[in-house]
Length: 415
Image (cartoon, rainbow, N blue to C red; front, side, top):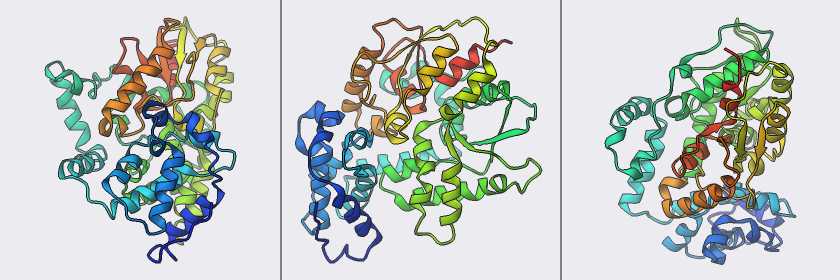
């Protein structure tokens, strides 16, 4: 697809990156078949192909309006279209550029602007944890719509962190909201890895991976998050502390995994961080990529499986963003679990998509209900996923327990 950049975009990094991505697009339309918003709304402009045209028109100097902004806002950034695309178009990178540039040209209504600011500032703030504790204390008094956003307080095991040392060491990203909302995911990860002979280290100075700000149009804020994390991790990457050198940076929230694996690309233009960012991305591993080691370490050691029947939902950020498919269900089955997948639309997003369920609640709820309808016919004892957003969002629509798959494994450990 040929693009003739308007003068204001010529020579800019954003313009050049967008032009290179657009050049690969052949406008075939395969992406429309796997786009959740197009399937729900039936509007070409709510498909990847339509949004690509809107971004192309803007880059060529056409006026952009609030309607253009709305169509880009409705995109889940689930990247299902990238899995389908025969030309390898990096749609996710393109839509992030498009959102950033449109937000510079189209003013948002005050209420919407305030909500987006609150999400960026609030979810990454050190005050988020204390505020959540207050919400959990009065959870029973909250309206249903808000109660779904406030998970129940974690149990006692959430604070149980293993203390053994192992020759094999990994560094784990704790995340921004996960330590407060679902702390047991991180401690369960450390316990399972410990049982498999791998020690989990953390860098307290690290925080949000940057995806939250980036997908809300604050690209510079997202890059600042990435630089902070790289600085926090670098001593352990290089083995400059008494803890030694880590073999991998493990991420148990698949959305954060996509972001960290993109640090090398995102900071390629930054001379001070390009090499470090590339190294960090090379070391980044989704937790599921350690499953061969976990499975061999736990084989024959699990106790009675209280939740044997598990329906597994692979997040978009795992199956599309990181192109990791089949590993979780395969290894859980090898350990004795009866694992089922969605009976159809397995590639579809559940509607969580970071802050999407807050910003686009109607579409998000429709997608959630479709996903649950495809996961629950086998009457699973638990639904498992690999991203905190998916877990929280799916749990808001079902009484079946929804957990991270690492928690399912952790609960099967003896003692």
